[in-house]
Image 1 (cartoon, rainbow, N blue to C red):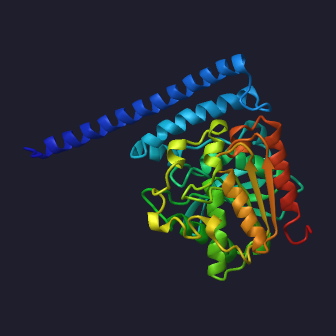
Image 2 (cartoon, one colour):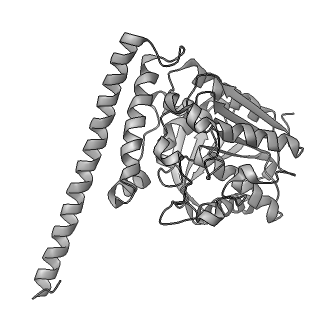
Image 3 (cartoon, rainbow, N blue to C red):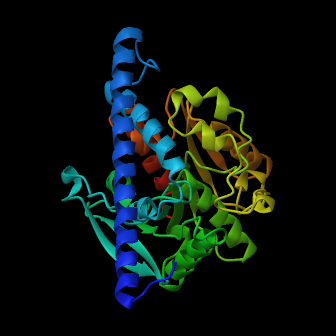
Length: 357
């Protein structure tokens, strides 16, 4: 397109940007409306037919329906730069009830931006969690997970560092693993004892924590004391049978999990151990705690990973919470099962660091 003057060129650029923003806001509005409509429909269905799962509260039923509709819409807008930026910069506050118990501040660790969480309790643990947020490697940041990480820090007394690792599709594999390694090296170089560090993460963050363990082993770095994986995303080829059998009781989009994830890595990389740790030799890894929902679509990832870990001589605890969906302690925090998951993690942490055995 030819422009007569610089003014015409600038006007066209501004108009195009405004149009793109309007389009993005309309998409965001459609996503929200779809979520609310789905939630109302789920409420009506519950009144007429009962809960989807016997243990689900009203709020859980509502949250699952809302997220299923919103995520399905968002998957179709994967090229929208505004929505990607929204996921990159959105911040949730620490819950009011925890404001006096947990502090959060923004830091840089080895050049990687991060949130540092500190418990103010007198019984503060020597444990430091290196926590990786979920979001399918394409969405989220430490701020989107502040509420859950703050709860975990408050219950366990541990500190936490949550890096803002680079996201796909702009930054594909191995960018996220590289950032995770940088953060871990920076903690050690800064004087942290590896025996007091626990890697942790939910969903894709759980997969990233597992990938980091493999990277640490290959680089012959000191191993951390262990890892906590919550509903870990460990197979980007999406071969787990539970993807289809649990589609009715989870909120992840079947349309996305019915095909391999080529947004994060190239098709010929999907079986690399650092991309899909479920295919890795796990020999030499530290103790693992794997938590999964019995009703979640990628339950099979956790089961296979735990079986392989046990086969390879790794000390692994697999906890499956029946009737719970993907990352239930975050999505359904009013369920008793969510409080139990936090308590399980806190108890496990207390037994995995030198001086606590």
